[in-house]
Image (cartoon, rainbow, N blue to C red; front, side):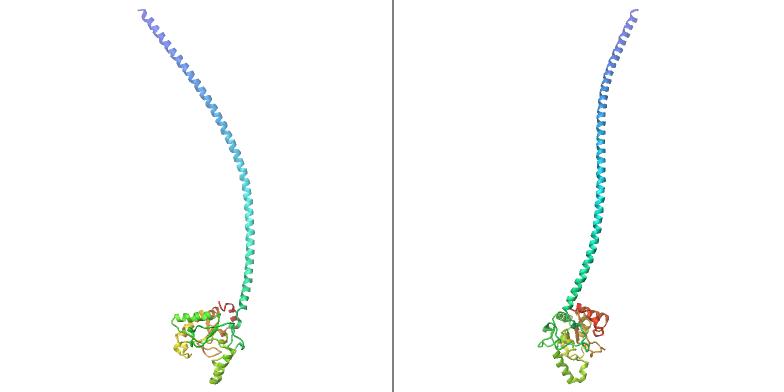
Length: 316
């Protein structure tokens, strides 16, 4: 009975020793773990310190770069401002110079225009727009600078040579060609007549009609035919007669269209120069003919100074 307590004591003692041994082992392991953790923590702290130093160094470098960039930006901004001011000054100077050159070019243009106008006027016979019928006089030596024959297909008598001023012939033949295209068969029965031819013609009229010839025939030197820019027109159906021409479709066509080719009716109804001559058409240039047509005016009703303004556009 006495051995059981002893054995129990011994068992408890061994148990206590085992617990102590285990605790000692665990303590040793814990110390070793703590040592390892301390070493790891120390390494981590060292790494963090190195990283922090590098980060601070990088921040310092970046701050230095930023400061340098700001300086460069400030310099560039100043340079840009200087360049912008220089550009603005250049543009203002350019605009001033351009305006000055434009004024100069305009002045040159005006001078050239005046020179061109004077040159053109010097090459245009002023007689071609003069009012001759009982107003101005053409001497016996006057004739246009160049006369050419009208195409025979537009001649009433193909055996005769009808002459016309060379620079205005294209306008006449263009008009006659267009009329033909419109079914109007206009023929030239009289064109240029010299001073001498007009003298012979007027003498023959006086022998037949006496002083009554003055109502329809001009004296030599006063005939528009001497200019070489005037024609008398008829139609084949009229057989060379002017009687009743004002009632024909050909005359109406001329009233409606002749101005577009530069031709005007010299002696309309109720004029104060000669009897009504619907067959007698004179070239005065498109600009003047258009003006007379649109305004309903008569060539001989204008002042000569007003007529002379159209000399520059006579053959335009």
